Length: 418
Image (cartoon, rainbow, N blue to C red; front, top):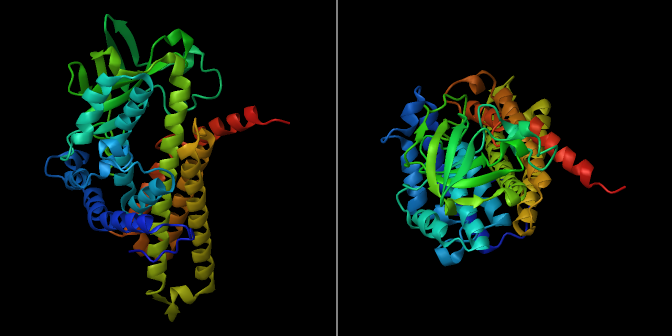
């Protein structure tokens, strides 16, 4: 296991065991597969039946790790707060792309369960949640279908601005048809797990004239008539987090599969954003830590100018600055996940702060690691080169940082009392 110092003295024996187990999975299974997938020239090969992607997914489900956030009465571990951060950081250390992909795979089902418990919607528990809970072969996989061709990260600014403006409305829309809903529209190529998912958590407009506020969230099984998909996105980094378009052509679903209706949409979307952004912060803290550790290890072995790199004072200062950035990211992301685990509703600006800061730290630390490796750091097959590309992707995914920062700033201004 990594020798990186954990400054939290309150980790219990159970949490230490959890950390060791997840680290082992990340080091022995997720990272090697992520490196292998990164070397593939064709993004379609990432999701083919013989891809290493499926080895990781099947092992994750076989070990029942997909249930970690589920309640204990469903066989889960009900992890949250600090425990959730431990898992996300260790997985992010091993392979941020797998960490995010596996997190997205669980999102529709955990969200559906929470909504169903609040409304007494037993059908969605029986038909949507329980197949996921019982799965041990990675057949039931979720995706978060929010981004559209004409709506990028602005979709995530649900709590600010004029959400009743027609221009903010989703292009994907739904309408009632008897006891069913019909969903029609397109989601953009940035749908995480869009090419492999069995179910999508779809954000859609109910009344476009009333803007984003008149929206809903549905769980849509992707085997239904009217669903089609685009090709896997050929990305700069994070190859294991496969992404692609999803299209809905009057897809018919039961009314119970609409888990959030317009009157609760802004609140629900804000809660999803707070949770997802907090998780991103933890995952990318792990990536930053991986880059720091790789750089430290290299600097203690590489001789330059007649002595080890780590004996050069400029290198020492850079390594120190990298450590400070990693540790500050860790503390902020832990604070966000720990606070929002019990806050109702979660505070989205805190989750945004963690996502924006930690992804930018990951990019900076990975860039510094490349610099310390020199020409080797720019070479394909060198881990820090991959970490650099993976970190760059994180500045855009789950909300572009500039857009998220503006959304959080608006909340801070509106909620400040002079």
